[in-house]
Length: 115
Image (cartoon, rainbow, N blue to C red):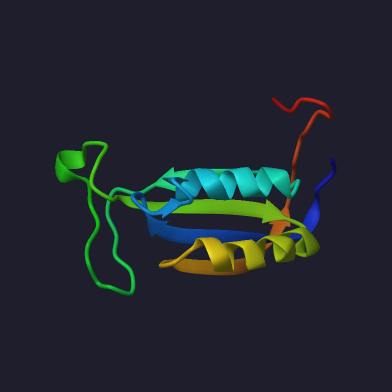
């Protein structure tokens, strides 16, 4: 797979406790990205944040619990990102989805390295 030059970055923000069909939403999104053959997806767990509800989400004593903010970041060609959006409309009940233009400098991938 080759990815360079202009691309799109899609970021999905939501709470760590959010679920989709009995599994963590972040895991379901990563699996959907892989099923759609997107270049990759990365999950980030935040220390603190708030969204439309203005409820501040933070782990108690910075432990690994209590609905911390989560962001999934996906970078790929625009047409591949567009295929993901209808899925996210169904999966993300509460959160923020943003798309921005990016310039890919380097993306290295060995064919057949999927595990």
